[in-house]
Length: 399
Image 1 (tube, helix red, strand yellow):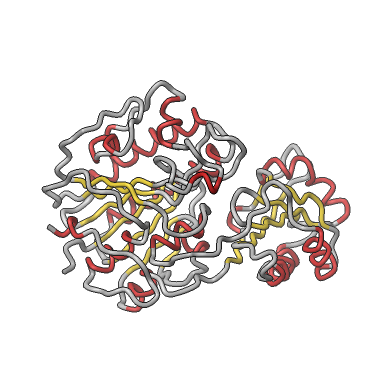
Image 2 (cartoon, one colour):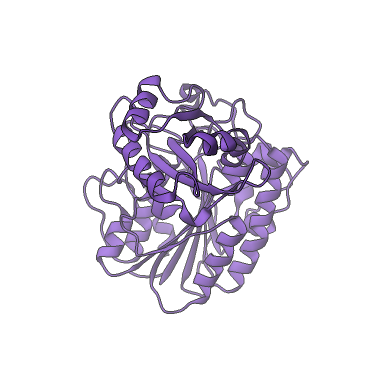
């Protein structure tokens, strides 16, 4: 079929659009990341996404529900998997149904048994062991870590165990060794953590500690089955991953990795990919700051402004798209910045599908799984999904 030569899939990390039918099971009744962020500023200005039909998916303050958007389809997707974390959402987009969720330790920290085993196997004392921003925990514990050559362990609302250590005291190689030990421990079913992340830092005191972004290392669980990315790669198509996508998939199905430092950097590098003609396939992008900077920190005003900033960059991106390009904008879960706690929220996600070549764009019915994204991408390139992948193609995109 190959209607679109290049597909750009951008995940606005955590930008959900209303509670799932089973939200009560997750304590997330009444959540809606898009709506509540917009309401916090009395309405947001997102003319590009408004023109793609985002206003038809929910009553978003400041956004008109345009019933005519001929170059874009808009729809909501439900999550079929059991969870509301980064890996589960992204994996489902590429065809994986996760029935057993990864464990999170946001409210309690990691069990004493895990910490004791990590201390015994690494030979380092563990300090911290609570959910925190990486920059904040360095201010609190960085000097102590340097003094005694311990390891700072912390987590977040994701299924992640992060270890921070000073580059000049502990050293990167020793930190990486300790993270490899942590990865083995965290594979045990009683823990089963999705990712272990090495966070080296530099500086002399709490006033100037700084994480070394380029030396971060992720030790992720390998995807539980074949994905759409694997199939694209097997068929010699590009799978260019911008942001943390390659970490989420443990490099499986990845052809090219482009690291980023922010949403703005991520959009800069995505637009660079749009301007290049010499490839065919998928550019898969994660923009994490919606989630990390505003969702988890329960900053609805910041979230709203981040959505507006993203929309401005979309205006730049669409200007350089070609007739045979397809842009897909979605999310991997919710993170309602007005909800209680700091965890992700169990929400449906938007899917906006835009191309200059689409002529009959409109609102489509809600779909039952994020995996319809991957199935659609495969159909575009004339490829079939493999067992046990889930998802059905969105056939309207090929009219």
